[in-house]
Structures are given as structure tokens and as C-alpha cells.
Length: 217
Image (tube, rainbow, N blue to C red; front, side):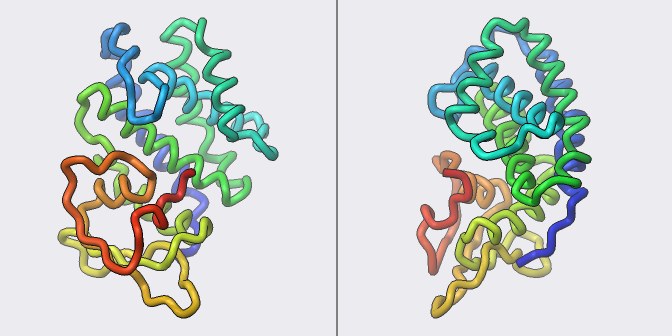
């Protein structure tokens, strides 16, 4: 399993602060009502969820149940009557300030940081913005995924990515089982591991089922 680098989550989040936030501040308010790949959630609600989750980390409210579906739904509902600019301000502050708290906190918070980056992809895809599940932060996201997939018990898999010199190792060894093999581009790989729609993608997976790879459930 890849060793943890505690600074990666902060780098990933600050990258979204510098790219996603300016994009969102230029989007017409009515477009925040568009539906995303997250069942039941609009663009605004995904942004509210992300800001709330990062605020929890900054404030140290990360105990049991902090990121449960019930807690997430309550956080989103609490922000329903906030002005849109307040939702975006909280998200920007979270992207800026959560990195050090994650670095000093439990390794499980790395998965939250990666999830925020994936949600940024959900938002971009819904709005038709470039860079969904890709862009400048992809290499950091893949490094985090290599760690998180091992911590969450995903079976060992070697992913061969275009133009990569060596396969990317994901997951952890399973006794009596050979490593799985995947040929895919980075965005498709990230969709596979985070349970995002795969319509229109192209990949070759051997030695594992798609459902075994998903790290968020």
C-alpha cells in the first residue's frame, strides 16, 4: 500500500479553491438548481455539503457519525436558506483552511478530501464545465486514491494509464487472489473507484468486479 503523504489533501483542496471557486462565481444562480450525479442533490446542495464537511474538519467535529448520510443531509438542510454567496464563501474557506487540519488529524480524513475533489467533478459535469474528474489535480487525486483504496480494503489492482511509465498500484493484497488489472484513462479510473456514472467511458478490467473497487458506499 502506498505510504500516506499528509500534505496531499491540502494541496488538492487548494487547487479546487483556485480553479472551481472562480468558475462557480461566474455561473448564473439559476444553474445551481441543476441535478448532479449525487441522487437527490442539486449543484447548490453538493456545494453546501462540501463546505459543511470541510467546516466540520476545521472545527474538529469529526467524531463518529460526523459524515454519515444523516449528518450530511442535516448540514445541507441547514444551508437551504443561506444566500448563494454564503454557500460559496464557506466552500472557499473550507478549501483554504481544511488542509492543515486533515494533515494533523486521522488518516481517514484523506478520504473526505478526495471526496470533495470528486464532488467538484460532480458539479463540473452537471454544469458542463471542463475538467470533471480530471484537470490539474488529477495526479494528486490518484496518489490519494492509492492510499485510501488500500485503507478501505479494495482488492489489489494494477492500473495501466496512458503515457504512464509504470502501473499505479491501488488497494491491498487479498490472500489467495492475484492482483486485478485495469486499462483506463485517469478520469475513468476515478469514476470507477468513486461510483460515478460510466456512460460513454472505455476501460478493460480483469480480475475484479466494478462493485469491489468502489470506496464510497
